[in-house]
Length: 176
Image (tube, rainbow, N blue to C red; front, top):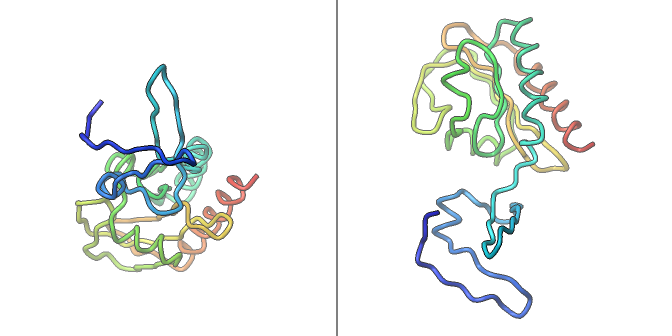
């Protein structure tokens, strides 16, 4: 385990402050949930993602949709792609989402780019894509995104409608 050399005292309410540099490095945002694990004398904090519970369902759903539509479709939590299907699967799966997609998540907006253009959809990697993005909203919070992407065909209004359907299905699944 990596040590940071930072020591913090516990206050009288049992709280500790996670230094800003560590929160920034791990992309821990204000109000975000952390899982707490105890192993002997070690306490471990891990970012909690409600989307992790959805990974298997999201994978089956994206495979079914991709088989019917022949489109590349991916699902990401707030940090990385967790499920997907299509010819670009190896390029996207388990990669970090780009700052551009993080902004879309933060703004809770649908985005449609009908024609192929240069864009960063994977953190640090630019590519030429047409795409449709829809945030997954659960109880008013954006918990992830659904992305349909193509590096050769145009994306249509029907694709943004499809991302909305998938996003709403996954949001309802999380809420139940």
